[in-house]
Image (tube, rainbow, N blue to C red; front, top):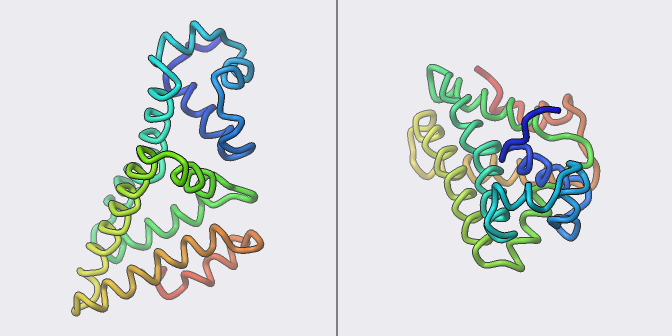
Length: 177
């Protein structure tokens, strides 16, 4: 059996959130799914609240910090922007509900809400910083940042999941290197 790490608990939590929703994010469900005991859970986390905060930090690491780190491999701001958009397109999968679940959770828990709002501000700030290098006018950079961020959210909440080709069409103006 593979060594059980904190990340395994957190990956399972994200999987549960994404596939079933927050109401299924319980210690007992995590333990059952991983075929582990509650004692194994408490080895890594002091409480369910401690787990929740670690989970939200893990989500930030995977879907914000790593995206920014990967985008920063690009040489120019334009290359970084293209890399970022391509990663976002790749990360959107059919029937994903992770961001929706996190936002619903934020409406019920102020600590989660503050954390998520901070992540969204961080994402928007990074995007705007890239765009300020691309567009001469700061207002134009902010406008394009709002458009891009709104597009990304809209695609995530759209009534149907778009194909990769459709997503590339939506973001076409920004994917030019």
